[in-house]
Length: 307
Image (tube, rainbow, N blue to C red):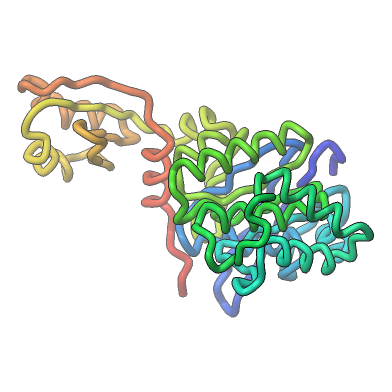
């Protein structure tokens, strides 16, 4: 496998009992790339991240993470990875500074004070250094978690839904920081449910119920979805939606603000079903399917593996 990739794995599989939660997944991520990992809850995203950094042992698969065998050399990989979990996992009765000092000690860093100071400065937390972690807002907790992940200067950052429950301003600031880190050579693998965040990734992979369904750039994933989408604006859209929802070729009818998006993969069937309604007062326009349209389409066609 090529050393040109920060992550280069294939056949990655994990079972819990009789249930396969990650099924024969391959992934290649370049150094300095922001790679989005999408999928519904319970699709295996977190399990995959934990196998990459050695927190879970895979049942199958081979390959390298940061040039190291991801199965045999996981202790060394852990030293080079920063992993930000979904849930805030730091001590709420310690200050920001004390939490960072504790993490630096865990990593056995020789000059902890300097490392903590650098982390505080990098993420704008110097003035809040004495504030208790439990008193922080969601955005500041997120910033502390990111600082802790970066304190040992990792080569790979694994972020598991890092912006859940965070306001739009904090989300934007977080993503600006992620892009700066990637520009400096840090590789980022991030799970998210936000389509605007997914569109900010260099490349994406979509996983549903353990299976990899699509991967590539945003444009490539949208093309792979194969959807034809119409946008309808005007009056009486709710009544129109009820009439067309179950027609042949109509797979999605979704409200987007003051418009409807109607999508399907069989363009001929879709057009035939919608043609009688295009003579009304509404405005119809064929548009390129969005990432959310493709996300929903893939999710609806995926088979649930819960058994």
